Length: 445
Ligand code: SF4
Ligand code: SF4
Image (cartoon, rainbow, N blue to C red; front, side, top):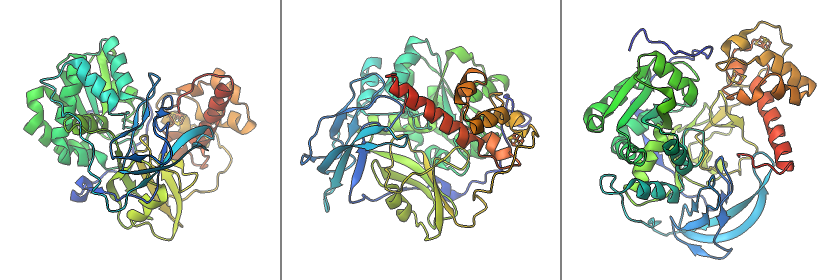
């Protein structure tokens, strides 16, 4: 493993990650008194409610069905009563239907269980249908329909399943928890995906700080399904699928990039966890981190849980000044603490007042070029930043390819003038999405 290097330009070397035994822990979060469930909580079309206000529902019961290819069904995270269904603004300011569900106090909250599936006894189509019915989305931050992804991968002739075991953000610790606590689910999920794609080749990629945990998994349960391991030196944002494939290919992995399909470790584990028990997606595994929390760590959180409730459960102190959705590099500031945890949420960071992670005052660009060197997709963040400040959004896309930005935040991280470049680019893209919506185009969430 030593001597290998990431094979993409730019990126940044973040402080070394030290793993602790506590990183493998997963706590189950309690139910809040009200869960808010947007009908679109992933990258795709909204689902359509099949319940009415006043309906009593059981945990795991269908609340909304998918009518478009990019939509996913939504299920009740708790047994309880539908209180209200109304249109509310989402994070981008677009209106989306929201089901509000009050969990029944004192209920055992036993989940409706369907037929547990065994990949050795199911047809590929049966497994594919079950993945769609379970409401699964990509859990590595991409958040598109897993069913649709598999349909496209199958049609495109994918022959190698790459499991992306690289955290999307510094500070997250889902990978060790999944490797050490959900090993059998990872293997079951992998077997299911291999069966759907009718291939036998798979590869698990992790960074060196998770190499030991990944090695244990592959040695104990992975070898009999042909899973091989690649341990890469850390480099942010190596977890972006395109960059990961480049790193793997140039570090000796026997990999034809055109034949590979990448799924996050969290997605593979969730496929195995849910389908092998006959369950559907009703919660999300998150890392809650930041110096504003007394009990940071991994939590399994019911969908629809208000962010304020999740933070309180993780021991949020009174001096929390800022909350980020995701992580410190590409995380978005939370618009309101009443907003819910959704399928697309991968983590929360609570930043205490006066923290080193605070926001310094931006200064003028000194044309140092550091952001250009750091950009892993070879954009020109300095020029894009200039255009953003002038409000020349169209030129950012037509002349400087902002559509290729992966919003990794490397440019902002290295900028000595503390210019919030990635935030400016995100705002420009949001503006573009709004214009596309106004023009009647279907736009991912
Ligand atoms: S946020 Fe976009 S422009 Fe900035 S470094 Fe990442 S990909 Fe490049
Ligand atoms: S890193 Fe900051 S100061 Fe340097 S060129 Fe880029 S935007 Fe300007």
